[in-house]
Image (cartoon, rainbow, N blue to C red; front, side, top):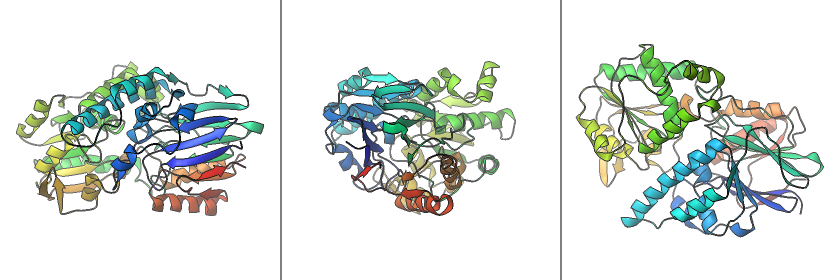
Length: 454
């Protein structure tokens, strides 16, 4: 069999990463994620895999976001008995993320929703065959086939996987590439020894504002809303985005750049994940490690209140005066953010800060695009709050920095780039830039199509 890649997910879509690499008689999956947002995503997630899970030898997980891990227990349920690999941080976070997702599925199934994609025993079987791999440790998985993990700089434990196969050729699967420099994570590593790259393109057609501009806007929007006595509502991904926001708020409050007001962390999952971040801080960048070792509690500050119980969450509304609420989910598709949006979207003194990517078809995307009225839990809610998008908080590299990543790789033997994990417009724009500016062949692969690495 010639080395080849088949693109089963993450094509023409940001979510649902699922790629099959075949070499040296081995079948290797990279990521097995949920499709999120968009019409028909739930139906597609429930379908039988387009390949036989029992024939897969290895599954490598780039990081613990649901669009990269969400279908792992389903893969096991449908017959996968191979070996799973990730960094230690990703394994620990994944268990928490999938247990939380199962609780939601179980609740929805009890209340007349769709059936569960997997059971807790399926999740436990996945964890039982899960091994860890450290950065830069070369691992032989077959004769003339090895893999090494490199730091993607995206979230805690995120990795790129570089496979070396026959005759010393290499293919790199980037997963999601970090928006370096990050406030917490080390910079994304550059690679200049690969022949092929399968890379993300979430922001392939646009750039973020600078960190200085991002910080200024974040501070000014908070101060402006506090001055009006309003509420700052932040729909936030529980993993990475929440921890970044807590770090930034800690800095602003300690430096007195914003007034001290109550800050509610209203997400049981985010509260639990933040504990993992605190415990595994040796994966942070060096200067943050130094701050922690010197006694700085980077995720804690005066006024921060965690609300793990539902009753605690409901009581936030009775808190008088200005306040900040960080709640999940990040795309306003479910979770506690919904009852806060029902209450505060009609309030002209409130501000909704959108700090992450919003998939097409989600409530978050409707709000971001300026809808004057949205439906939440069967009720039509007018939107009078100020809506502010701050893209600089994204954990993804923007267009110029994605191009920079490929440009560094082009110093080596790079032959071709497969551009995936983006909306079609973003992926096609980035592919064209790579072709035009760097002179390396770049394509947007077709879903389900196999490409031979010649």
